[in-house]
Amino acid sequence: MSDVETVPYAETRTTRLDPRWLAVVGLLGLLIWTYLPILRVLVREWQKNPNYSVGQLVPFAALYMLWTDRHRLARLTVRPSWVAGLVLIAVAQGVRFYGLMYLYESLERYSLILTVAGLVLLVAGRVVLQHVIWVILFLFLMIPLPERVHNAISGPLQTVATSGAVMTLEVMGVTVEQRGHQLELNGRTSVAVAEACSGLRMLTAFIMVSAVFAYIVNRPVWQKLVLLASSVPIAIVCNLVRLVVTSVLFMWTTTEVASKFSHDFAGLTMMPLAVLMLMGELWLLSRLVIEEQREPAKISV
Image 1 (cartoon, rainbow, N blue to C red):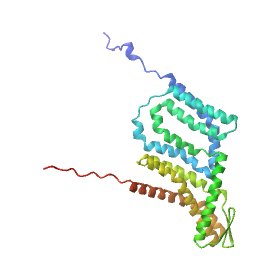
Image 2: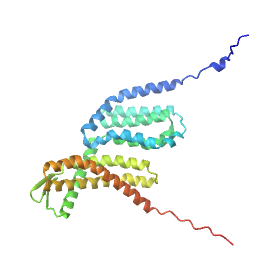
Image 3: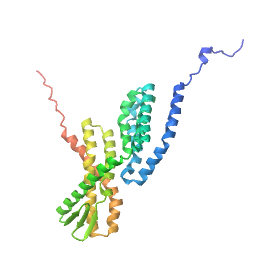
């Protein structure tokens, strides 16, 4: 009698890989390949346009947000939504095709974010998509604004920055004569508030920082929304501080020193200032909410 133990055929069957997952891998590779030209253009724009240079940090910030939420995400049930995911990906490609046909470059870029949402829905399902939807929406911050929207925002920001600098300098005792966005300080020093000084660069950076703060802090939803909305006035205030200090340096130091502060040192100091303002805002919000005190239990004798 042989010592070799036989195993029934039913027990020797191996688990086969669902062919749908092979199709998903192929679809993912195809989408990455077709979006590579758009990603290359985005990288070049991040590098040459300082107003949107913060866009290159957005994907890393999104990964950090997911990492901070990893324990809650690990408890979710993964249930792929094949049909809904493919429909959303198809809609994203329709948006992309429309942008390509009618030369709306921004639509091609926005379709990338819709495609990411479709892939999450396809692979992980509705429950996971609902929990990461804010992170996916956060990815829109890496896309530069359309030109019309950019001009509609940068122009008023430039005007606000100029008017704010004039008022602050006059309060400080400086004689200011304004000609459009050109300032004449004490009748001898000219300072131009160019479009680059509008504060749009700070605005995009501070919105990203505020969004990360709002996501990771354990606060009510309304406080998160207040924190996110406050990024606009914080950016305006920080840019005003930069303009005033730069103007004073133009009056009392050399042009080289003032220009170096405006482009180098100010960029490093304004972000910590904005973070401190956000932390102060969180402290203030925590003091505005007074928890209801419970009355001590009465003991009957």
